[in-house]
Length: 258
Ligand SMILES: Cc1ncc(C[n+]2csc(CCOP(=O)(O)OP(=O)(O)O)c2C)c(N)n1
Ligand code: SF4
Ligand SMILES: [Mg+2]
Image (tube, rainbow, N blue to C red; front, side, top):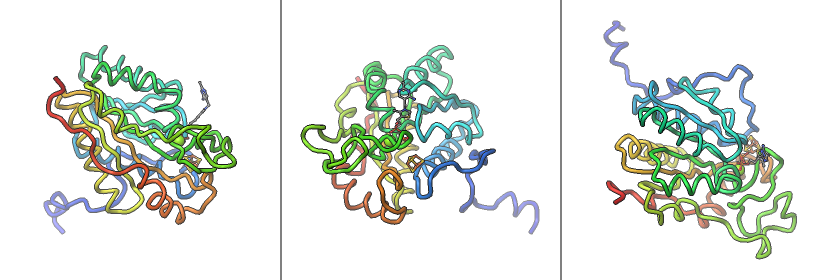
């Protein structure tokens, strides 16, 4: 094979160009989908060729490690405050950086709900990715705003019921707000869904690059130990229990928010 042939090779699989090995190895539980979401983020930033301009922000939770495996700038923030820190970075650097956050559902829509909604209200040109695993994974599987009705967690041992409320549909909610340019929900539990979700995430970052408004993608994400099932059963749980409650697709996609 000549060096020209090598140059012309098409990338078909393998570790994303911008995803580096963690010095301490993978610390997530077997079957966790956080590392798959990390791969997608690395792929999206790489495909859009914005790595030199990107600041990647994590909240607190099992996704926090993500900023250490990206080969571009990153920072970890206080619990739920990624949109606030993202706003500061975006505005103090006069809009130049591409600001992307990865947050858990507890981080994003429980403790961080105010920060998220305020950022959407201001139409911040940032992109938030939220991993919906239906609980507070890091701290042992407590109920989150996304916990399904009937789902057993450590704080709903009889299953979530009327007294503990109903699952929140975040992309649908954000779609009703004017500052939101793009909102969608994807999943990574099958290869086809992985590819579809990559397109959603790419579109979300593109909205920011086009200076349209706030963009958001929720990604359904397995947490086998806290769901008390195996990694393979978790794929079925997403298909049969989560997707009927949390439908996949785009909920808002506009070229102009005014
Ligand atoms: C101010 C503050 N309150 C509480 C905690 C404890 N805490 C750490 S992670 C976490 C929940 C994380 O859940 P989620 O955002 O859903 O992430 P997951 O681990 O499920 O991906 C909590 C409550 C904290 N670190 N800081
Ligand atoms: S507790 Fe759940 S979210 Fe956290 S690393 Fe394990 S599987 Fe992933
Ligand atoms: Mg969670």
